[in-house]
Image 1: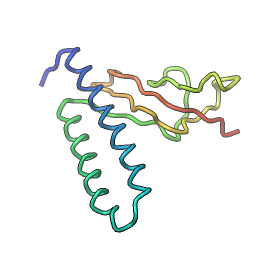
Image 2: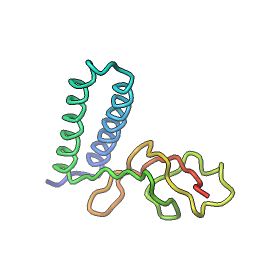
Image 3: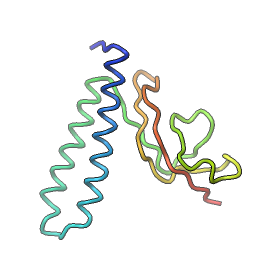
Image 4: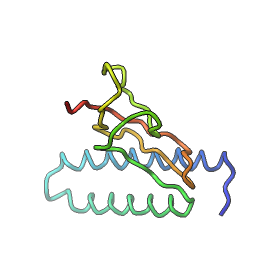
Amino acid sequence: MCWSAESLSVMARLCVEQWKLIQRFNKAIEALEESEKGRLASQIRYSELQLQTLATEANLKLVTFDGESFGPGSPASADNLDDFATDEGLIVSKTLEPAVVSDMRVILPGRVLLDNPV
């Protein structure tokens, strides 16, 4: 299937918004009582599967960076890069938004928070 650049961009943004909603929903599930968690956790796992399936059908891949090194050329911007004197040795502590990639090309860069493990 061949998408226009505009359609691909819209699809990428939609995938990121769905990913963020799933992350927030997972966080909300943690606050529930055990008796309520099961059904909702199953629903969110199904939504995650659907997101991955639809993204794959559109030839899109969502890339997260948790625990990875951050540096020049990273397909993500860091919201807290100014908090560090140097950008060497920084590790991604949390992916705020995944990057969306298609055919080894970044369609939408990600957003991350960094940490200096040293």
